Length: 350
Ligand code: AMP
Ligand code: MG
Image 1: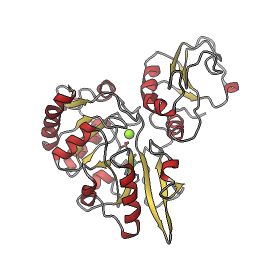
Image 2: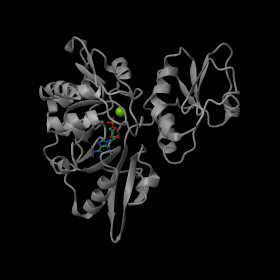
Image 3: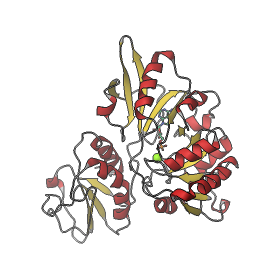
């Protein structure tokens, strides 16, 4: 679908301090009820929200993002009780769904479940399954509850670009394409939700297929089931950008430098470093006279901080007028799995 610039005269940003939450929620719900799209903060990244049961409204998400219609959306519900309005939970995984939602909802875990017939095909790209989560962000929750309907909300960026973790980043991505951005400050997780589907096993804990690594880690999920990768050939699997090799990409080429010996700078080119800690004596910092250095976790080297800052730092370097961004890898444990996943997808192919 092609987006037409003339559709929206101006994008409004409303700030949300505690005392203004009610007004922002009222504004957002009025637009959502009128079948419009609104950018809302979630704990992962900013989402572009629409009434999930209104296909005309959902179509506006695809148009504003220039997102291909084969890429299904995540549906957000206000309470666990609302799950039955968007999904049909099979008996053989009901116990697992209960345990997972008890442990991780509201929060950054998305479950892929058989879809309820009320969910439009446009939301699920025609799949028989729907991806569902309950956001923990107070603004998103309040809008979801007040609206009284499920909300479809992918990240509020143009297709294939870096996910926004602040209202100003949404403005850069979608400004003048959408009527309202609710500014709830910086996102507390910073990377998109973990996505799993569930396969029952007789007399054993279920298998969780990891469709996308995210803030809820493999280690955390293992308490409830066996975590495995999505099978290579899965009949029901969409070719979804969350799974496409190139995604979350800056416009400046990003090179993930797993081995510092592989760095061969070209004369006269400007290079920026996406460092983990930014320590003066780290081998990546001392490798080259960088034109810019941004650190994921300045000084402390904490993966949680690195995840929160990842997309922000990518944007900063993307706007620094560099010829290439050189990224230092992080350790692939816990949240590091999601960070490395995003860095690999942002990176140019060798
Ligand atoms: P986002 O753009 O962050 O909202 O992520 C949406 C992603 O969720 C898609 O790109 C898919 O990877 C995944 N997804 C959504 N619905 C399904 C589904 N029914 N089956 C498999 N993956 C899904
Ligand atoms: Mg996205």
